Amino acid sequence: MNGPDSYLAVGLFILAILAIKNMEITLSKKIIGSLVLFLWLVFSVVYITNDIWSNYKDVQLVLAYDQGRADVINTIIQEAETCQIVPVFSGEKEIMIVNMACLELTQ
Image 1: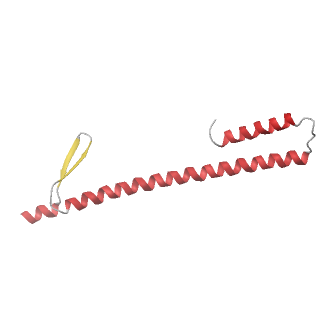
Image 2 (image 1 turned 90 degrees about the vertical axis):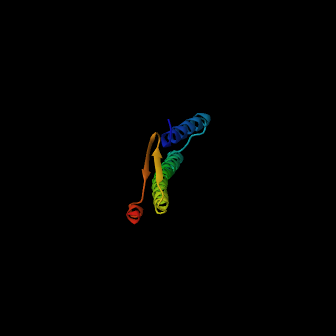
Image 3 (image 1 turned 120 degrees about the horizontal axis):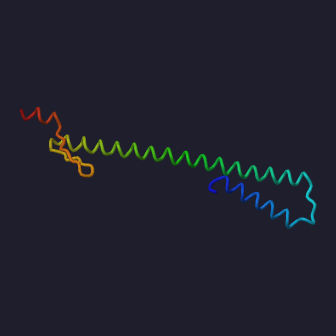
């Protein structure tokens, strides 16, 4: 088990241990209700925090991907503006990019 479910299982396990150790002490319904409410509150806070953190990580991942893509495009544009041939490759594939405005100047 991973995530919030494991926290609930741990909470129930702790509750069971407390019940076994304190068998001679009779717990009133109010104390048991308060304990269950407290455990539910802890579980809820952990679950909501985990959900918010997961969403935050996903947003940051998308932002980093978009920033990387923009940086690569800007670098290619800057190099192509110098009227030089710009090699672009991915793995085994390679192409040469030339700025069309530079070709029109040479004609």
